[in-house]
Image (cartoon, rainbow, N blue to C red; front, side):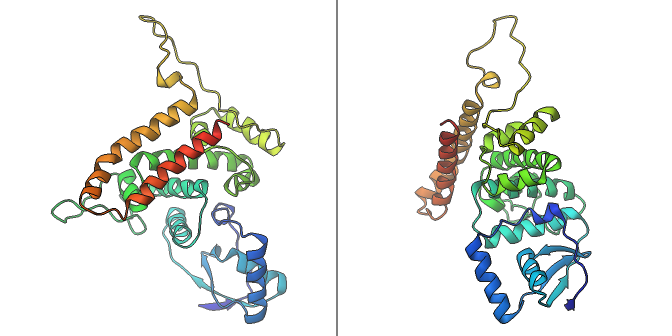
Amino acid sequence: MSETTLEIIIDEEFRILLPQLDEETFRLLEENILEYGCRDPLVLWNGILIDGYNRYKICKHHDIPFRTVDMEFNSREEVLIWIISNQVSRRNLTPIQLSHFRGLHYNADKKLHGSSARFCASPPKSQNGTLHPGSTATRLSEHYNVARNTILRNAKLAEALTAIGEISPNIKRKILHGEIQISKSRLEALSSAPKEEIEAVALEMEAGEFIGRAPRTPKQPKDTAGGSSGTDLDSALPEIRRLSVIISDFAADFNTMFLKLNSGDSAELKPVLRSYIDKLEELYRSME
């Protein structure tokens, strides 16, 4: 650990992972640092700041000395997972921020799987207590206590936000901080939309003209044998497809929840049920 006056590197991909402090919280942090100094060290990786952005901003503005501590990681993916784990464990995150973190964790874990499990979620145990790797989605679903399909959808959401961020980092930040309203289901759909569609949505947001429409998707060919089906989920409204996924997830988890309830273990039921209620409420709001 050392005190430094060296210029610290700010990496936008890492910085945007930190939820923005509201004015009052930032003011209180600033007052505390002005009175007592910067007591907690800033965390660096190869000169890049990975924890302590608000403290760094305050110290630079008021010319207050600070200490740093260097951490060793083998890749950016390991850094991402470390930052995500830090934020999830110590902050109250909005649903879209939490979904973004889970999706980023999945994508980073997929890249690391097989080469380094140092920062991956712990693999699940089999009935005899031995470890087995399982799939990335399964391991993370147990790590975050959500359905496996939720992790896979979160990965699509993270991909869409990454694509938007490549066009406009500021728009990505506004989405994550709730300054631009777009449903998670529409972000998930954007992940498979043409690049031109994503660019158009980002530009609409930049110009303040975004109205929350769903991305265009290629038309599905009609069934020449029996004509088009009015109940085909592939051609249904995005909201209907989303509702179908929520119901499927709940049905898949119901047996596990039923066994827990019968055994008298209801401690984990509330957060699971709350997650499904949140999904339904979000879907309802997106249709207003």
